[in-house]
Amino acid sequence: MRVVVQRVSSASVAIGGEVRSSIGPGLLILLGVGHDDCVEDVDYLVNKTVALRIFDDGEGVMNLSVRDSGGDAIVVSQFTLMASTRKGNRPSYINAAGHGKAIPLYRLFCDKLSEAMGKPVGTGEFGADMKVSLVNDGPVTICIDSKNK
Image 1 (cartoon, helix red, strand yellow):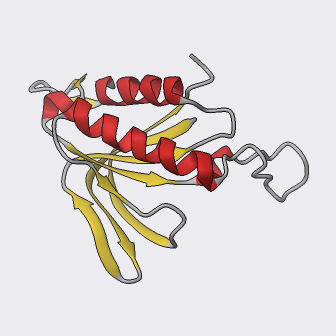
Image 2 (cartoon, rainbow, N blue to C red):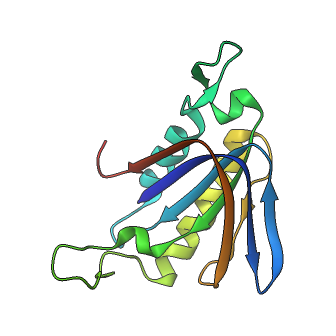
């Protein structure tokens, strides 16, 4: 399981021209689920993501987590994070989980992240054509793979 965590000033997800979720300061999280991922991968990434100290404290030092800073989060499913580019120029998505496995793990990730943050988490819609907008703050972008602990 992989996440791309972006510290944002604001972010939103629109589907079919309608805004599904929007936040002010916080995290935009892109989540890719692999065919060999499980609940332990969800737990690891939720705990790591919610504890990342990438928000400025009173002295301008990245020393606060999203929870500490009171920020919000949006989680967007993105199977392309599981792409392999080892051969040729056309990415292979053979490592991405199918809907039957990916959807429950995506929902579990969102639920556990919401619980860890103590507030609702915005979402996109699994498999939808989404338009994601963000103002990356910093920019700060962190990639985490649960298989690289």
